[in-house]
Image 1 (cartoon, rainbow, N blue to C red):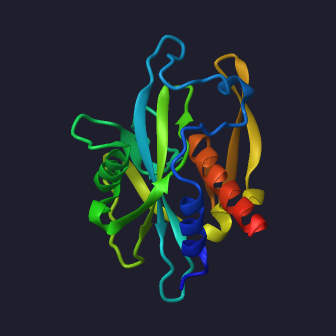
Image 2: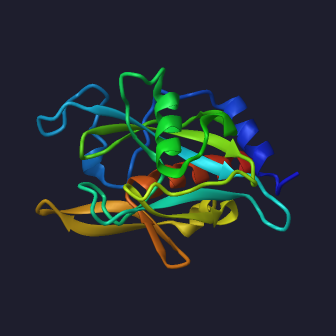
Amino acid sequence: MNDGLIARLEKFFRLSPSSTDLILPPDPAEHSYRPNQPIDGKNLRHAGVLIPVIKAGAGTESRIMLTLRTQHLRSHAGQVSLPGGSAEAQDVDIIGTALREAEEETCLPAHAVQVMGTLPALIMPSAFHVTPVVGLVDADVKLQACPIEVAEIFYVPTSFLLNPKNYRVASMEFQNRERRFMETHYDGYRIWGATAAILHHLAKQIHQLEDGS
Protein backbone atom coordinates (compact mmCIF):
# COMPACT_ATOMS: atom_id res chain seq x y z
CA MET A 1 0.00 0.00 0.00
CA ASN A 2 2.60 2.55 1.01
CA ASP A 3 6.13 1.20 1.53
CA GLY A 4 5.07 -1.11 4.37
CA LEU A 5 5.24 1.52 7.10
CA ILE A 6 1.55 1.36 7.97
CA ALA A 7 1.71 -2.37 8.56
CA ARG A 8 4.82 -2.01 10.74
CA LEU A 9 3.28 0.75 12.84
CA GLU A 10 0.04 -1.18 13.24
CA LYS A 11 1.98 -4.26 14.34
CA PHE A 12 4.07 -2.22 16.77
CA PHE A 13 1.08 -0.64 18.50
CA ARG A 14 -0.81 -3.93 18.47
CA LEU A 15 2.08 -5.63 20.28
CA SER A 16 3.07 -2.62 22.41
CA PRO A 17 0.13 -0.92 24.11
CA SER A 18 0.67 2.51 25.63
CA SER A 19 3.50 2.34 28.13
CA THR A 20 4.02 3.94 31.52
CA ASP A 21 7.78 3.77 31.00
CA LEU A 22 9.87 6.76 29.98
CA ILE A 23 12.04 7.58 26.99
CA LEU A 24 15.57 7.85 28.32
CA PRO A 25 17.65 10.49 26.52
CA PRO A 26 21.43 9.98 26.23
CA ASP A 27 22.28 12.34 29.10
CA PRO A 28 22.61 10.26 32.31
CA ALA A 29 21.69 13.28 34.42
CA GLU A 30 18.16 13.12 32.98
CA HIS A 31 17.64 9.44 33.82
CA SER A 32 16.67 10.28 37.39
CA TYR A 33 13.59 12.28 36.35
CA ARG A 34 10.34 10.74 37.52
CA PRO A 35 6.67 11.55 36.87
CA ASN A 36 5.10 13.91 39.41
CA GLN A 37 8.49 14.83 40.91
CA PRO A 38 9.62 18.46 40.59
CA ILE A 39 12.76 19.36 38.64
CA ASP A 40 14.85 22.12 40.18
CA GLY A 41 11.84 23.16 42.22
CA LYS A 42 9.47 23.30 39.24
CA ASN A 43 6.41 21.04 39.10
CA LEU A 44 6.04 18.98 35.96
CA ARG A 45 3.70 20.30 33.26
CA HIS A 46 2.07 17.77 30.95
CA ALA A 47 2.32 18.25 27.21
CA GLY A 48 1.48 16.26 24.10
CA VAL A 49 3.18 16.23 20.71
CA LEU A 50 1.96 14.65 17.49
CA ILE A 51 4.13 12.57 15.18
CA PRO A 52 2.14 13.08 11.96
CA VAL A 53 2.96 10.26 9.56
CA ILE A 54 1.87 11.33 6.10
CA LYS A 55 0.85 8.33 4.04
CA ALA A 56 2.58 7.67 0.74
CA GLY A 57 0.98 9.39 -2.23
CA ALA A 58 1.40 9.22 -5.97
CA GLY A 59 5.13 8.99 -6.54
CA THR A 60 6.04 9.79 -2.92
CA GLU A 61 6.98 7.64 0.05
CA SER A 62 5.54 8.10 3.51
CA ARG A 63 6.90 11.10 5.39
CA ILE A 64 6.82 12.68 8.83
CA MET A 65 5.75 16.29 9.10
CA LEU A 66 7.88 18.61 11.23
CA THR A 67 7.79 22.32 11.97
CA LEU A 68 10.40 25.03 12.27
CA ARG A 69 9.51 27.31 15.17
CA THR A 70 9.55 31.06 14.68
CA GLN A 71 12.50 33.08 15.99
CA HIS A 72 10.52 35.24 18.42
CA LEU A 73 9.13 32.48 20.66
CA ARG A 74 10.26 32.46 24.29
CA SER A 75 11.26 28.78 24.26
CA HIS A 76 12.99 26.69 21.59
CA ALA A 77 12.91 29.57 19.11
CA GLY A 78 14.09 28.66 15.62
CA GLN A 79 14.28 24.94 16.42
CA VAL A 80 12.76 21.99 14.59
CA SER A 81 9.83 20.59 16.51
CA LEU A 82 6.92 18.19 16.40
CA PRO A 83 3.58 20.03 16.63
CA GLY A 84 2.37 20.09 20.21
CA GLY A 85 2.24 21.95 23.47
CA SER A 86 0.96 22.12 27.03
CA ALA A 87 -2.22 20.40 28.18
CA GLU A 88 -5.17 22.70 28.82
CA ALA A 89 -8.34 22.28 30.86
CA GLN A 90 -10.56 21.74 27.81
CA ASP A 91 -8.51 18.78 26.55
CA VAL A 92 -10.18 15.40 27.06
CA ASP A 93 -6.79 13.71 27.42
CA ILE A 94 -3.18 14.07 26.29
CA ILE A 95 -4.08 12.77 22.82
CA GLY A 96 -6.60 15.59 22.60
CA THR A 97 -3.82 18.00 23.60
CA ALA A 98 -1.56 16.84 20.77
CA LEU A 99 -4.37 17.01 18.20
CA ARG A 100 -5.50 20.46 19.33
CA GLU A 101 -1.99 21.87 19.23
CA ALA A 102 -1.31 20.33 15.82
CA GLU A 103 -4.44 21.97 14.45
CA GLU A 104 -3.53 25.33 15.97
CA GLU A 105 0.01 25.22 14.60
CA THR A 106 -0.49 23.61 11.18
CA CYS A 107 -4.26 23.65 10.45
CA LEU A 108 -4.27 19.84 10.56
CA PRO A 109 -7.89 18.92 11.44
CA ALA A 110 -8.16 16.50 14.33
CA HIS A 111 -10.64 14.38 12.36
CA ALA A 112 -8.01 13.92 9.64
CA VAL A 113 -5.64 12.11 12.02
CA GLN A 114 -5.94 8.36 12.55
CA VAL A 115 -4.41 7.95 15.99
CA MET A 116 -2.37 4.75 16.25
CA GLY A 117 -1.18 5.06 19.83
CA THR A 118 1.20 6.79 22.20
CA LEU A 119 4.86 6.31 23.02
CA PRO A 120 6.42 6.45 26.49
CA ALA A 121 6.71 9.98 27.81
CA LEU A 122 9.87 12.08 27.79
CA ILE A 123 10.61 14.25 30.82
CA MET A 124 12.59 17.32 29.84
CA PRO A 125 14.96 19.45 31.98
CA SER A 126 12.47 22.29 31.50
CA ALA A 127 10.02 20.25 33.65
CA PHE A 128 7.73 19.20 30.81
CA HIS A 129 6.31 15.67 30.78
CA VAL A 130 5.84 15.12 27.04
CA THR A 131 3.72 12.30 25.61
CA PRO A 132 4.23 11.59 21.89
CA VAL A 133 1.14 10.58 19.89
CA VAL A 134 1.56 8.77 16.57
CA GLY A 135 -1.07 9.45 13.92
CA LEU A 136 -1.60 8.72 10.23
CA VAL A 137 -2.58 11.48 7.83
CA ASP A 138 -3.69 11.17 4.20
CA ALA A 139 -1.27 12.62 1.67
CA ASP A 140 -3.83 15.06 0.25
CA VAL A 141 -4.58 16.88 3.53
CA LYS A 142 -3.75 20.57 3.15
CA LEU A 143 -1.63 22.13 5.87
CA GLN A 144 -0.76 25.73 6.62
CA ALA A 145 1.68 27.13 9.18
CA CYS A 146 0.38 29.42 11.91
CA PRO A 147 2.80 32.36 11.50
CA ILE A 148 2.77 33.19 15.21
CA GLU A 149 4.42 29.89 16.16
CA VAL A 150 5.54 28.14 12.98
CA ALA A 151 7.93 29.60 10.44
CA GLU A 152 7.83 26.58 8.14
CA ILE A 153 6.30 23.14 7.69
CA PHE A 154 8.52 20.51 6.10
CA TYR A 155 8.61 16.77 5.57
CA VAL A 156 11.24 14.07 6.08
CA PRO A 157 10.92 10.55 4.60
CA THR A 158 10.13 7.87 7.15
CA SER A 159 12.90 5.78 5.57
CA PHE A 160 15.30 8.38 7.00
CA LEU A 161 13.72 9.29 10.34
CA LEU A 162 12.85 5.69 11.26
CA ASN A 163 16.41 4.48 10.67
CA PRO A 164 18.29 4.52 14.00
CA LYS A 165 21.62 4.69 12.16
CA ASN A 166 20.84 8.25 11.06
CA TYR A 167 21.06 9.58 14.63
CA ARG A 168 24.08 10.38 16.77
CA VAL A 169 24.79 11.55 20.30
CA ALA A 170 26.09 15.12 20.44
CA SER A 171 26.97 17.38 23.36
CA MET A 172 27.04 21.05 24.32
CA GLU A 173 27.72 23.22 27.35
CA PHE A 174 24.45 23.95 29.15
CA GLN A 175 24.02 25.47 32.61
CA ASN A 176 27.69 24.95 33.45
CA ARG A 177 27.81 21.30 32.48
CA GLU A 178 28.25 19.17 29.41
CA ARG A 179 24.82 17.98 28.27
CA ARG A 180 24.38 15.06 25.85
CA PHE A 181 21.49 14.82 23.40
CA MET A 182 20.36 13.09 20.20
CA GLU A 183 20.55 14.79 16.85
CA THR A 184 20.27 14.18 13.12
CA HIS A 185 20.55 16.38 10.04
CA TYR A 186 18.39 16.27 6.94
CA ASP A 187 18.43 18.60 3.93
CA GLY A 188 19.87 21.49 5.92
CA TYR A 189 17.61 21.00 8.94
CA ARG A 190 19.08 20.18 12.34
CA ILE A 191 16.73 17.94 14.30
CA TRP A 192 17.89 17.62 17.90
CA GLY A 193 16.97 17.53 21.56
CA ALA A 194 13.54 16.26 22.58
CA THR A 195 12.31 15.94 18.98
CA ALA A 196 15.27 13.78 17.99
CA ALA A 197 15.02 11.71 21.20
CA ILE A 198 11.36 10.92 20.52
CA LEU A 199 11.89 10.06 16.85
CA HIS A 200 14.98 8.00 17.64
CA HIS A 201 12.99 6.03 20.21
CA LEU A 202 10.29 5.23 17.64
CA ALA A 203 12.96 4.33 15.08
CA LYS A 204 14.55 1.87 17.51
CA GLN A 205 11.21 0.24 18.31
CA ILE A 206 10.32 -0.23 14.64
CA HIS A 207 13.83 -1.49 13.87
CA GLN A 208 13.68 -4.04 16.72
CA LEU A 209 10.27 -5.16 15.52
CA GLU A 210 11.62 -5.76 12.01
CA ASP A 211 14.61 -7.68 13.38
CA GLY A 212 12.35 -9.89 15.45
CA SER A 213 9.81 -10.58 12.73
